[in-house]
Length: 102
Image 1 (spheres, rainbow, N blue to C red):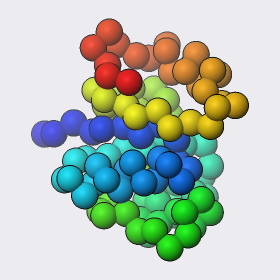
Image 2 (image 1 turned 90 degrees about the horizontal axis):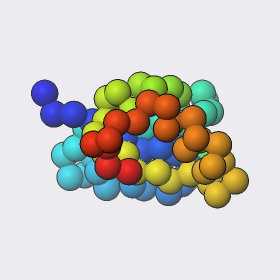
Image 3 (image 1 turned 135 degrees about the vertical axis):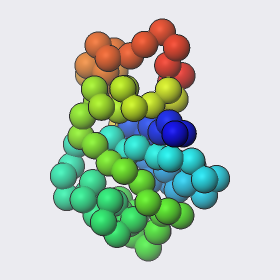
């Protein structure tokens, strides 16, 4: 089975990156920290809080677990806000392998 491509960050930029990956027939796993936002992405393929009017080109799976993201993906797009980047990268670093592409 084809592995996921991960998107770390579920804001406007993360949503667009996920949409482009889905449009190109990739399996996508989006990791975020806002349950309502992740639920909407999973159920409706939209993200009205950060990107009103945009619909994903397919169904993305979602998680709030950095460990799950690292375990399921070989490639991860980091699209985090600058203020969160250091802390999140420090945490996900515990789960990354040497062959991950970030």
